[in-house]
Length: 308
Image (cartoon, rainbow, N blue to C red; front, side, top):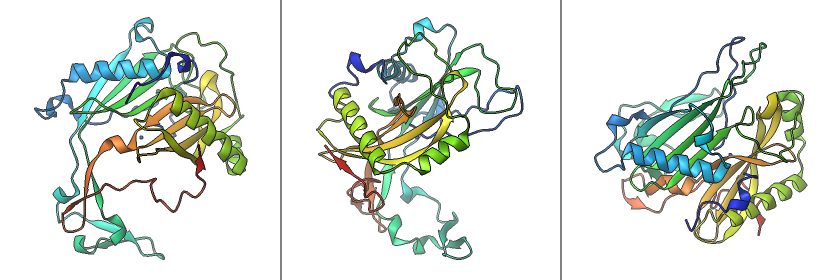
């Protein structure tokens, strides 16, 4: 990448960003998920854990404008995921397909549907989870309110290239003026709003995301197009239920990413996924190396592309 993010975007700036809703018992901290194997299981050719951690912290600072040196006693956990090659899957593993009537049925590996192929071979990755205490007690109703702010990052374990960044903002960790508070009242309100979003919303979010991507230079080539592909809700700032929207982005050379934006008007970036950075190459059913597949390029399920 030419650069991660220009300084002017820090105040604006979401596996980014899809958040899983977890309902916990009253006054009990929400469970956290730390991805990856223990770091001692990293391959000998992976960059050192300490280097990966610093790259992740620097990226979170640049994308989300956070100065971890000002946030007190934060905690970092690191994990490692090895590369994944579908040819190495045990032949005894059960594979399922949908039969269109009764749900899933097991099939033999050599009968795996054609749409599975070519299958992507994924690179090894470092994963980091950072928790920042914010001295707030979780909501007594048991809703998803964290007593920590949580940041996550994923890097290519061999090169340090960014794969994913996430921020779950439950309260302002630092003074960030001009960020409007939004509250939709309940998750149902946010979901109902998302169901009623129109083609005009798609244009609005796509154009916003493309400008953000252009200003941040997230791609090596120019931004080509964007589309609103997902929406829902997550807990936001000051105990608010906020709309989230996921926008797919593609460059002129086929690089792909998604932005997760939180807040109907604010559109704060809380998640970034560089999907094309995860893939090394692809293999066909016979094990031959071929061009990687993309969830965006040529995907007939995304018909609402807005071009720059």
